[in-house]
Image 1 (cartoon, rainbow over the protein chains, first blue to last red):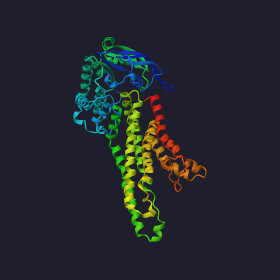
Image 2: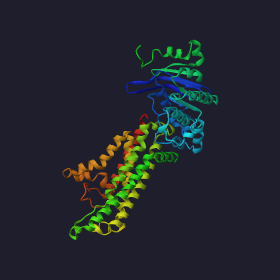
Image 3: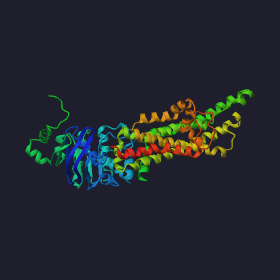
Image 4: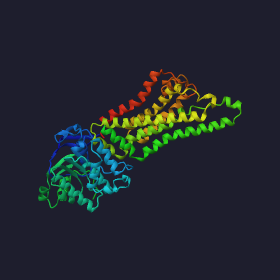
Length: 239
Length: 258
């Protein structure tokens, strides 16, 4: 369970997240949508305690993230697949993270197998494709076998097989009763993966509903998204 | 303890750390090479020149090599995380943050102690063996008389490792932190040494390079440094160089958005 309560965050004069309130519940995949710069990544950083909110609060399983003592066992997150040290092997990258939460090499090997990187475990990350880095980031999120998972655009750079793998993984994790918050710009993919949808624009909540409700009122999820965010896109090409 | 294990793994799982440590130990070879060359020249010189020939204490001169190397290791321990973005993952898995910096300080500080002691004692013993009683007996003083200075000189390497880490966490930039570090070792002491008195002596007494020998009361007359500090004051100043930047960094790390 993830709860955002009137969460607000400025960077200088830019209002990144504006009075955002919504709840992500366990048991299904919640899609997190919004135009570039709409505050999705900021919201995720606020949930993880990486940035401090100006006001409001974000709770994970009823507690502020920063009060968790072994957070990997409760929350896993993939924020930026490229945020890895190129000179370190995939195995060591994961083991560095695992050690901090009292997890060992056996668990690292398990998740590397789970994401299909067992064969590349000892290779340095510098030579990885974006798709492989996405798999590595997902492996890092899964290390502590957490009940709450957040993924910021994990599908970018994956081949069709990888895209399908992510979709199945997300649905499986949700079916196990976990809370899944998944951001993506690929509407067709989101329609196949998510059950619930949260849409933000300019840092504010635009919609908190189900995929079924959106596709009932519009031809496709993409049409619904375009209609709902029409007024809040910040970066648009002129026609 | 878990965080220390993680930070230790971070250091030893990238190639740059290995290179830095090997380079530091290269100071020993450099010292022996210089001692051997100087001894050869000494032996082929006429007695009149021999009596006037002097040789610097090589373990004190060459300490700048491990000092700079470990300083860079300290910088990279944190700035490589900012450069690659792994700092976000590190602070997500340890949300209280300060244990990350404490663990980094423990790891680079311990490596500094180890490398400092190895290079200082290694250089000293090998040079003493090569030089023998040449150069007006620069290496003939009893070992126990030299021991305090060797210890404080070795300690200074750990000070640089922590200073590098502190500058790194404050500036979050590899280039910025290394520039300041090199400035503190080379550039500022040169400038200070050429200032008019009393400034040269005053400022020269608080340069890092002067502190190990002020702690043990060595003669600093023929150096760019001053020697106005009592041993306790010099020890305090050296500790401040090691700890103040790290403490300031810890405060910033807790307050800043990652």
